[in-house]
Amino acid sequence: MTITRHDTDDTPAVALRAPGTVMKLARMGSFHQTRLSFMRGLMRRLKREQWTFARPVWRIDNKGVGVGVYTATGPERTYSLIAYANDLDPAKRSDRVIAEEWDATFALFDGVPTEDDIERLADHVPKQEAGHISGSELSLSRANRSVRLFEYVSDCLAAGTQPEASELDKVGYLMRTTAVYGSAKFGACDRRFIADRPEFQAPFQAELLSVYLTRAFTVDIVEHMAHAKAPETSVKLDPDLARRLGVGNSTGLGMAPFIVNHPTLLNNWIAARETALARVRSVSATDDETAERFRSFVERQKIGAYLWSVDHERQAGRIEEFRKDMERLDTHCRLAETLSGSAPWDRLFQWGEANLSLEGQECLVTLLIEPHGAIVDDLVATMSADESATFRIDGAMKLGPLSEIVSRHYDEALQTDFGDPAQTARFWYASEEKLEPRLGERHEEPGAEREHPLCTWRNAAALAADVAVWCDTDTGSPDDTVAEFLLRHPEHRQAVRRAQIVARFPYSEIQDNLISEDVLPIDLLRCKLSFFGANKFDPRSDRWVRITMYQHTPMPNELAQWDPDDWIYPPLETGQ
Figure 1 (tube, one colour):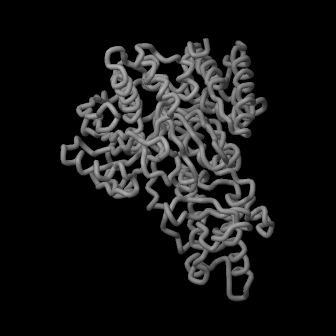
Figure 2 (cartoon, helix red, strand yellow; figure 1 turned 180 degrees about the horizontal axis):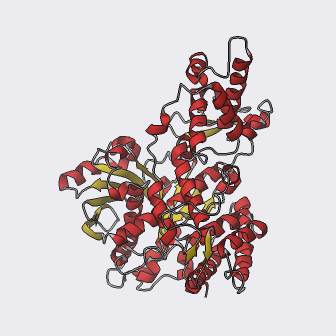
Figure 3 (cartoon, helix red, strand yellow; figure 1 turned 120 degrees about the vertical axis):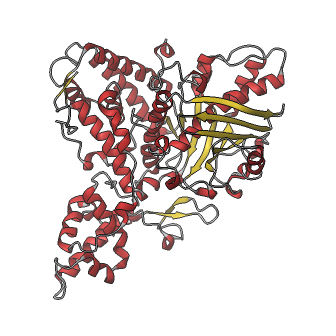
């Protein structure tokens, strides 16, 4: 293909979308996974480096209680998922963070565990938060069965038959995780000790490797339970059907503040995605093979739109419009002139802006990027961040330039009336029992005095007001330093830090009021999970969501023979 940039210059000819467009919650809450998402990058690495997989330990009884160990061996290291299976009382099965028992619990071990390691962790991993793991463990997680589908598949296999594919597609997973902890939580290894390992330089690679191995466990345990029910007649799950099953996940407010509290990291995620889009839009002409691949992705995504079904009223309405979007896109792309001539991808993008909903527009971004791995995949290496480098406040900055930064990057915040109760209706805090993020109703509930500083717009407006007062006094001046100002106004330290960050990293700040009565936390969740590589977003309220991960991915024993990227969209035969 021909692109309008020099081979040695990665600057796209088409400008990146403005932060004021991209960083709105309604748009961020419409993001879909892309080939830059962290699962996708991990799968390509596992394939490229020829990782091998094994299950050296399987000691699980006929009640489904015991331990299994799965190993993943790369060029330099081996990692092991230790899985503790449990015969859980149905009355104790819950996706809520307050649960104390689960169908299975897991730890990703750095290396190959000894019997002593397995025994040691058996006293802690099943307890999750109530236990304590060590620096040898890279992640801690738990999962519950999707009871109806798990029992249906188990019964089918026990009877010697295969489950119906349509039944598998309705749910998409046998088990769903309710938490995957890493980065030093509960004693696990701190990320800084493993961040220089090539396989973990991209974000959340250890956690997502754990989930990929967990997927293998979910298939093994359902086959095991089927054999326990009827050892004479039971059969294994057909590989084509096993591939249709991913791992579910239930995610609540605990994840929402992450992208607010990590502005530089958020910037790098968004910047990579926007740069990829701009590079594709800058392609001057395409070839028949790329155009045909793109059309097949559109057709497969259209199938996926009809497999995406939720009960949440708001999202159900959006999905209905999204299905119409995919029909319109499919029809438009079948026109010969759509992908011919000059700048076809830019023209298609602009058509999408004029003809598709937000959900459809952001899916089109994903589809545009998909067949262009050769010019975008290098951006995966830019998606980490050394946040210590941006944490230090530049005290020597003058108040004049600081004021200009705030005016430029928080212009809508400065126009917001925070005296209006609707604009301060919510407040973020941490629960006393689990120290998990929560969202309170400021004018109806107590606790606002313990508010966490996620009210970025209100803080920016307060900073701007106090800087203006300072500079308008006889003793103050725009030439005074930030250090002088903060000595008198230390309450603005965080707002100053964020302003200095956004001046350098324009996608680091969400362009919405995070404490208004209209804020939808699921938009924050959707944004983050799209970068993980999740799909089938299923909101259960405005504060928690279920997703599917790794559905249609090659199983570990198949990865050597399969394309590690051609799995995110349902195969064409799914719609037949």
